[in-house]
Amino acid sequence: MNYLKNKYFARWARKHGITDNVLLDAVSEFESGLFEADLGNHLFKKRIALAGRGKSAGTRTILFYQKGKKLIFCYGFEKSHQSNLSSSEINFLHKLSDGYQDSTDGIIAQGIQQKKFFKILKPGE
Image (cartoon, helix red, strand yellow):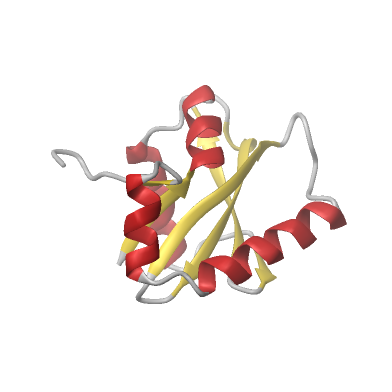
């Protein structure tokens, strides 16, 4: 199973101090069924706590999940700047999801080489 973040999300996460360890914790929670919303088309909303602020005042992430194949963090926003996604953002994310569904392992590997995707690394990798 591939755990990834797209280029946009990687930049956003770095800016907000969200490490791969934090993302792996979120993945573990997600795979246990702990997430905030199913947005349809393999997209889910998952809260992530920021240091000293907790989940309710933290960030919201949107991830693409195809069971047994791939999980891709693709969008993030702070609750303090935006309460929820607009309909145009949801439409854009659904189109992005369509592309992710069709992505083979070869396409993902090529995306990693081209720095369009980044692997979420476990400690020691």
